[in-house]
Length: 261
Image (cartoon, rainbow, N blue to C red; front, side, top):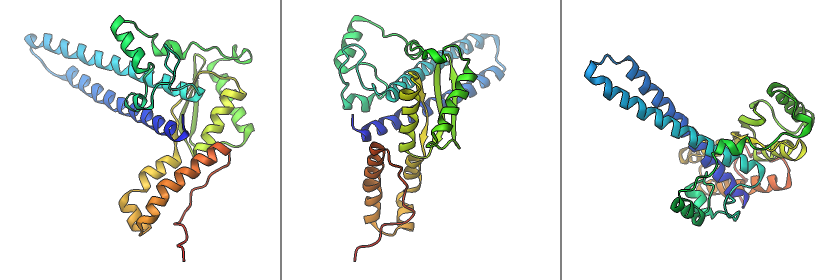
């Protein structure tokens, strides 16, 4: 899968995850409101039905989060977008519509018709074993070993990086400056340390910068030309991807390119 498509699908997964958490907080608010409501006896049955519905919605959201985490884990492992049933690539069109899907369109129809169920995402996430040298480490000890390896490598900015471990699964939270460092981190954990279960929730600062700062108003005010706007979106995207592939650090320009005479 091209790097550009993979980065775009990853952002879609992270955005879906964020939306689920926002919905969860709304459900929490509704549950609190129901708990504080002074109701008559005849209203208790209705209240119970509402509570059951909210509980079911929250459980569904939890399963969706696990599906997203499994997709992010497979993206870090390099086998994202492969059908769990036929082991063939899932079409980009289907992934764009359902980024966390685990089956291709044909196999999904087969599973639906036969009422078959895939293993729960969490079972798949926790299935991989730690390398022998880390098996006897507790969560905190494994976290410290990972941080030591990152520090010794010296190529990764730790300022906004948060790492935690649970049941042999490594969770990456926070943010990292650019896609180049992001790929170095993933390779260090998977290829060098041999960790198979990495759930990657990291935001890439360079992508946030492009999304938030390069709005049409900002481009007009700061740059003054439509030409540089097009340059920013296309040229910088190409440069970022190329630098990631060549493992060369990329630094964003702090000014428009010089005008051609």
